[in-house]
Every structure is written in structure tokens, then in C-alpha cells.
Length: 361
Image 1 (tube, rainbow, N blue to C red):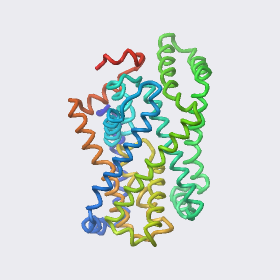
Image 2: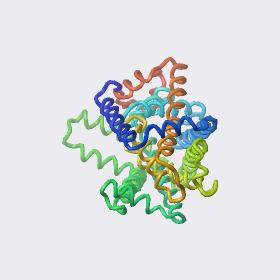
Image 3: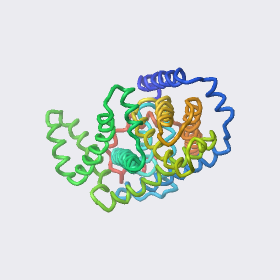
Image 4: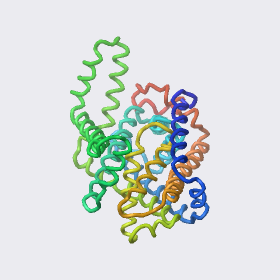
């Protein structure tokens, strides 16, 4: 997987996006901003991000508890390793690594675990959209959507619809699949009918495991709890943006700390929605571009392009580098490597029941 063409395509895309990022800013002034920054805020910013990952782990535990109850202390390293893999591999292949790794460690079906990760991603997107919509009730953000729409050559309403509708539709479909697993399975088997018997049975088995992972969505109470657990994840990540902002004196660009807090929630939400495309490893290049341009367009802030570029670079480094280091540490402690995990994740067909996989280790 690491040496696959996808890796090189992702790396090439990052290079192109970084090129665009650097050619649309005064690099000298950006370097000056980086040199003048107060990096004392980096440590607490990283701490907030690690706490947000703890909430992610608790949410993931809830999503998987109907299959196997795994201690948070056991799941947390798996989450970190998954994020490390996403930061180093293109096309969000770290999700496959995480699903395989939890299967290997805890005996949970890889396909079912992958389904829970898909649910996580949709919950994240829907929560971010809700935060943006809530802020839009009090802050005029039409300048942001209008500017992005103009630069992309897309009408602002269509741009908003294009980014919102797929996630809302995905959540609706996942809930429908979870509520009617037998009907969904029968429909899949009917579609697969022209395929050879062994292949049809294999895909059908994976579908059954995948639907098992969606089971928590059958309960409105569980779904509500999952959405509530998702909120602190993103508020804490916004806190990471907030603290890094103080490194560049962005507090002076806002009228007051409360305005800066709201601005950073909006900034982190738009950045994570806008850079969610599964392309370059860690979203390198795309994250910086979206963060910089959004910060420049925030109606409640006034900052320079060079400072915005420096801020976006350091914020992304705070989100990426500690996860890579910590994930590598966890793998070393178990005498594993990302190369071996990614290779095995790509080749495992995962048709063995979870109860029979415990001896795999």
C-alpha cells in the first residue's frame, strides 16, 4: 500500500497544493511571522487535541460495544495509530489501517469496524455543519461562501448545497441501512446475483459484517448520544486553533476573546469540511489553503495574508506531527510498523467471524 501509485498521486497532489499555497503569499513575510511567533502555546494546543482524541475513543467504544466492549485505554492507541496512518497515507487509507489494527488487537471484524469509522466521519461532518449553521444565525458568513464560490466558479448556494447534502444524505442512508439490515442484505444479494457464487458469497459476507457495524444507528437515543459526544471533539479542536492563534497575536485581530472563540469554531469547522477530500496524506496543502483563505475572509477578524499563512502552517503541524510521533511510539512498543500494518490491512478479506479471530495474534 505504501508503494502503491495512490501514494505517489497523493504526494504529487500535496506538492501542487503546497506550490499554490507558497506562490500566493509573500514567503518572506510569512517566514518573519513564523520567526516572531510565541510557540509556548503549542504544548497546551497539542494537549487539547489529545483530549479531543480521547472523546473520539469514547465515541468509538460506544459504536463498537455491541460487538465487543474494549477498554478506552486499549482503543486510544489504535485511534492514534489510525490518525498517524491518515497523516502519512493518501486517500484516508489510515481508516483501513485502523480497522485492521483493532481487528488484530481486539478480534472485532475489520468490515464492521470500518462501518463504525464511516459512521464517525458522517457524524463529524454533520456536527460541523450544525456548528456552522448555528454560528450563521448570529454572524454573516455569506462573504465567506460567496468568496469561495467566486474563486471556484460555483454559485454560493450551490457550493453550500454541494458540501452539505452528501453528508446529510449519507447519514440518512446509514440510518436506513441499520434499521433494515435484512432488507439491505437481500437487496445487495439481488444486485450481486449475476456474479459467480463464491464471489457473491464473499461480498455478501462482508456486507453482513458491515451492517453489523451500523447497528448502533438503530437507536435514536444512541444516535443522540453519539452526536452529543461529537460536539466536544470539535470544540476542543477549535480550542487548538484558538491557542495557536495566540501564538500569532490573532487576539488583536478580533474585537474580544469571545469573538475570537466563535471565529475559531467557524474557522476549524469550515477548514475540516473544506479539506475533507480523501486525497493528499494528512490533507497537506489543502488544509493550509482552506485555513488561510477562510481566516482572511472571517467577518469578525482582520489579519494579513502572511500571518494567516503562518498560522495555518503551524496549526496543521500541531495537528499532524504529534500524532505521527505518538503513533510511531505505540507501534514500536508492539514491535510493529506502518508498512506491515498497511500491507496486511489491504490484503485481509475479513470473512472470519470476530469470535474466531482472537487467536490471530
